[in-house]
Each structure stands twice: as C-alpha cells, then as structure tokens.
Figure: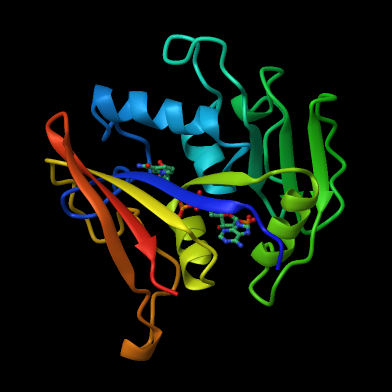
Length: 217
Ligand SMILES: NC(=O)c1ccc[n+]([C@@H]2O[C@H](COP(=O)([O-])OP(=O)(O)OC[C@H]3O[C@@H](n4cnc5c(N)ncnc54)[C@H](OP(=O)(O)O)[C@@H]3O)[C@@H](O)[C@H]2O)c1
C-alpha cells in the first residue's frame, strides 16, 4: 500500500487525558512543546484531525509566523463522514488548503481552498483510513501529522497505520471517567490485540517530558 509517513502528535496529562471532561480544550503543552509542535507541523505535508476536534476546539491547524519564519502551511485534513464541518470553521479559512473527507454528498459551499472528497466508509460509518491515505499519497502528501482527538488516534493505531508517535506528558492530572484520552475508540479485547510500541527517545521538555515512540509491526 502506498501511503504517507504517519506521525501522531499529542499532548496529554500524567493520567493520559487530552482535554477537559466536558471535551473542551485546555492547554496541556508547555511553551517548548508548542514550539516543537509548530516546527513539526511546518515539516509535514498535511495535518489531520477528526470532526469532533473541529467542533470542540475550532483549531486553525496552520503554522504561525511567530514560531516559524516563512511557514510552509500543511494541507488541513478533516475526517467528517456526515459533513458537519461548519462553513465558518477556522480550519477552512483562507490561510491554507483544506481537504474534508466525507461519506456522503455534501451540499455545503466552502471556499476555493477547500476540497470535499467523498470517500468509502466502513461498517461503523467511519472513513476507511487506508483509502484516505492512498488518496493523500496520490495527491503528493508524503508526511502526515495526525493531531487527534482520541477516536482518530485510536483508529490509526488499531489499523497499524502509524510510524512515529510523539507524546508530550505534562505534570498535571485532569481525571474524569469520560475525559478524552490519547487513544479512545473501543479498545482491545485481549492480549493478542495489544498495540505494541517501542521507545525511540525520551527527553525532558519544560516542566514535562516528550516521548518518541515507534510502532512495533
Ligand atoms: N491534547 C491534544 O493534543 C488534543 C489534540 C486534538 C484533540 N484533542 C481533544 O480531543 C477531543 C476530541 O476527540 P474525539 O475522540 O471526541 O474526536 P475526534 O477524534 O476529534 O473525531 C472523531 C470523529 O471523527 C470522525 N471520523 C471519521 N472517520 C473516522 C475514522 N476513520 N476514525 C476515527 N474518527 C473518524 C467521526 O465522526 P463522524 O462519524 O461524524 O465522521 C468520529 O466520531 C476534544 O476534546 C479535543 O479537545 C486534544
């Protein structure tokens, strides 16, 4: 299968949470991690999130000039089977190209920088990630940064479609049974389904630390 190199990047608390229990964003990354995240985004051809992240956080998904001089804006990719992306979402603004992958015909009119692509969906109504990656590869995307949320990260990990995983671990506890975590989805059923990682590097970063994992395939 021809696919881009897939990098997951995420910031979590010491208890593995990536947002508030009400699914709202909170700042987990330190200044140093934010700087690193923008540098990484700038090096990737595309950056991907799920529709829930768009609806809860309304991220721009661009590279700020404050962090990178003459930024190379990655293509923004949104997984959105039901075409719920609001027309005024910041991730479809004019600052970069956007590709919205849906499972049905979408009648919304976005700007010229937005490409709505109808893609195959699986039995759970989710975009088929292998097809998505092949389409991205055909369009010249060599490196894809997956930023979340937990459902999307789970999907990539579960299907073995990840090469590198960067996790910033902040010295904080968020708690809450229903709080989004690094990998949500349905989880594994038994030890034979474990998703194994190897640690490539650990470094301290600001008050927390950054772990670089690779998937064991
Ligand atoms: N700390 C961090 O680094 C970080 C980064 C990003 C997000 N977040 C947090 O993550 C939370 C959102 O995470 P979430 O798990 O609720 O949602 P999500 O992962 O952002 O989006 C999941 C949705 O994407 C759509 N989707 C389509 N195809 C998919 C596929 N193949 N695999 C997975 N999803 C697919 C589905 O909705 P449809 O069926 O409608 O298409 C699915 O429900 C927010 O609270 C946000 O703040 C944290």
